[in-house]
Image (cartoon, rainbow over all chains, first blue to last red; front, top):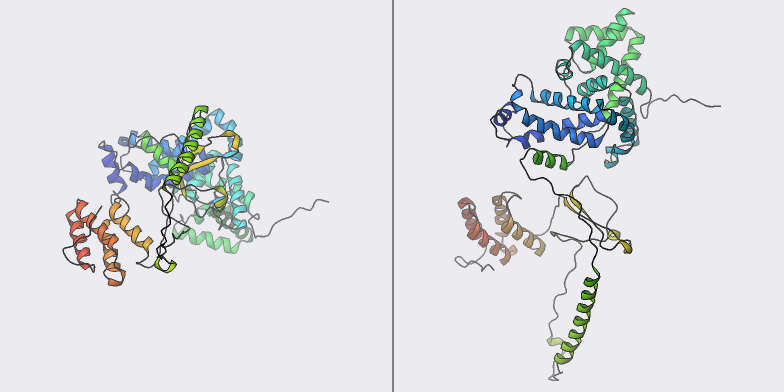
Length: 193
Length: 273
């Protein structure tokens, strides 16, 4: 299976044979999970998202026509799932609590990370939370998934111009929040008399 | 100023290298000539760089299990919690009775079978002491029970822990148990004559299935044990089992070749249990 392209694997799935499911999962689960985890700020929800995205991929395999990349299609499903998740009022109410409880702080498992990197990680997470979901989606897909604005527009269901604006506004907010705070850089200290 | 705001909107595109070469050149030229935009560009780059510090998180293995189960491709993972069952009082009574029987029986048997001393000139020199059992700190085992105080609190790397069970047979003893499967990577190095190495390779030859191709192990065995100094009957016995049991003709042929390369008399394969 490893030597087959995404399109070839999907053709097998479309024929009713789910044997490539594991291979497709191995190729994309990391990216899907990380996108959902950063977007939702909740590890448990990211797990559910990852599982359901791949189940939907099998269920709606015939809707994939091969004119787009498989990764773009999977990110579309993921983004839809995440937007639905955030729309639900009870999830929104839980969100703040989950940030405190469910974030596994992956850096805790990586002893090689410096204190500076851990502090930056905390700041970046906090700054990403300050963005609107649309901005967060756009910047995550651009910065961490390396997708083009055309691909992001396809995923978000908007124009490329709208993506450009979202990324720009996201970067403006992040810049204001993060610039000058990087560990090891110059810091502005406010002295309280 | 309008130039500046238009160019600043391009900065994210400059970061993702999405601008065409002409626009990229124009934007860089402006940044170099405008102090405010230089500051702005530096802030963008710093922000972009800082975002690098958000690490990739590994997908927990259970997600794949759940997906495959939901898709009907694999069995649903079993519950990882074992229901707690207290030992009934009768069981304690039965255990106590068993201990009494064992102790009494041992005393009786011991008294009846104590050997008489035969004073026929046996000297300490005529007795060959048995080789003491070497207790080594590690053993490759299917299951292992370890006291928490013998376990280092340092967890090395990110081992994959699955099928966790929580054990608490006696709530009053302030002891809990955690039982789990763990996939860890072992590297064993040593002389081919080491009994541990011989036993490990024999086990691999006899049980290898999904571990790695058996032919790889056969090649290693041929290379290491064709030297007469390393000859070991256990290796030859394991090869004989491969020869008898492996369903692949190619592997059996390779096992014969390996056996022939070993310093054993031809035509006398060691017996297998």
